Image (cartoon, rainbow, N blue to C red; front, side, top):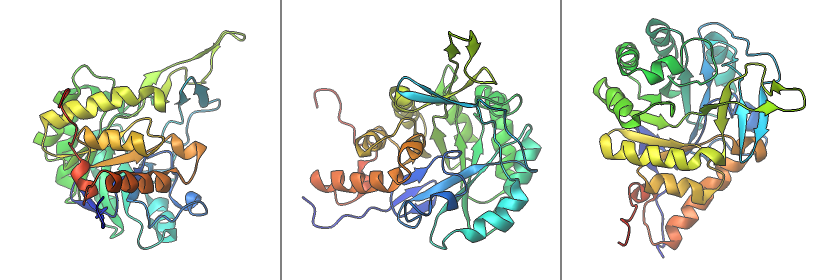
Length: 308
């Protein structure tokens, strides 16, 4: 067992104190979770996806439980970039690592958002939400078309020098191809996966359970899909990978690291346990110590071949 452990990792050029981030849309603007965990003791968090102007979401019902998961169709409800920069960021502790998430309906809008948030010194990086599965326009359209995705990443890359991460959609035939597009256009990392497009039906009312009909499936049900995609992307690109999808405990997180992720994002688990991210970060450290690692970063890509 290693006497000391270095928990620090580098994700897409962002220095993190440990590899655990929280996923956009599941952690609000950070302050909502301050009573439950110290924001300066997790790697960081990805704030709610921002639009240029305040945006209302879909009408309820827009969240529903499913077997081993959750459906949501919030639809990027947020306060807008101005309120985020002027009101939300100043309320956060100075040591919290904040990654902004940008959403739009065309590349120029994403680029303007990236330029706006890049002006603030508290923003450590920008995640492009190119994969939201439950909005009427934008998001998933970019995440499913290599040419549109290339145009989007290129536009945002020109607008900012900050570390740039692209959140990819699982609703594609070849996830490695999409990651290669991001790498070729100058992205520093990719996050995968976003929620899987899905629906559920109430047989008593004979209606969809969500007002939007379609939503994004998250939680443990999608973890094997996410692991597969992280592993495939790790074989295809050299940029950083953040693993997302159904991470409920430290063992889940370690699986993503072993498959090639440099960091992970905790999402649905935040609804069940608002201190989940800190619990998982501590569990990863315990795992690394038990297995004789001196650095948590050495877990990345340490998956053993079958029979090895």
